[in-house]
Image (cartoon, rainbow, N blue to C red; front, side, top):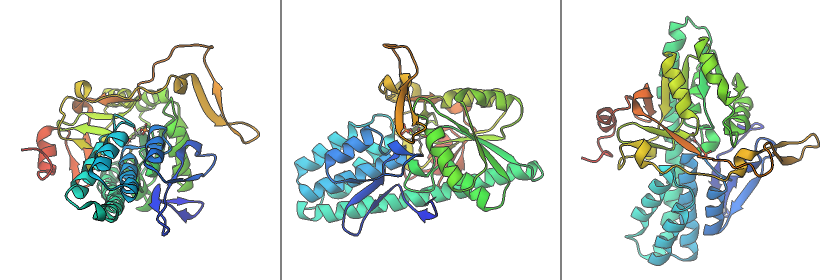
Length: 364
Ligand code: MRU
């Protein structure tokens, strides 16, 4: 997607061999590009959320393996790199998916061939992500087109939570891809962007990318969605996911569950944009089986923003020493999900429909 008219991906490899990312900690106020040179750089970038979003976490881990293989392609290094990178963030399954995929490709090869094979597979994982998201966009477009038709061409209002946009993926985004495709198709569309406390991915990233692409939107506080739904101002919700279980439970950014409850209470369709690497076929009950990341209390007690002098600062919003809890994700039970928008088409959030959509991936 574009920043100031220039096309970017969120991660890329330069001709010189260096791996670069957009350091998302400073967006939307500053565009800073970082070079990741060591395995530890990659681990820090994922843990400290220089990169974030399930698909991008996976792609970054893949390049982290490749960079380490160029230094030390031994079996021991391959194994240790899996462990080090896997320990960075617990919830998004794309991290494990990408690390397992790199191991599958690299382990059978002689060490001297591993670095080249690793960089090639990491680049493929990135390209595959872009294609998956493009396809999610085309399938999601049909849902939006149908709503626009039913409304006689009147504006279609979409609500989204967190940032499941292009910075959360290699390109296109998942939840935003149907939005971009609908706008391109000439559909009159508006997006309500949940600010998404505590880290404000909606306020900082989703509003930024929609603004860059001229998509009509309003930033709303997290608590406004239910009210807008009650007043008929939301036609559908589209969110991303960090891990979806084999029976269709959806783990996503904290607060997603409350939006799903409000959507159900108000008969608003609730869709999840789901790339297949985000399905954890090994788990079924999302509430009991998915590890939920607990992040630092300071993300709750403080807020980052830009001061009048243009400096990016963090300010405290609660009394000194206030204890805080910071679960970063929640689980929306499958029965609250209207449909899963995958790269192969739209399916119900049921074990049968998911297995029928992905017979090659679902365990028999
Ligand atoms: O903590 P984050 O910013 O990594 O959380 C991101 C989300 O919850 C996204 O909705 C999810 O990863 C899907 S991204 C296409």
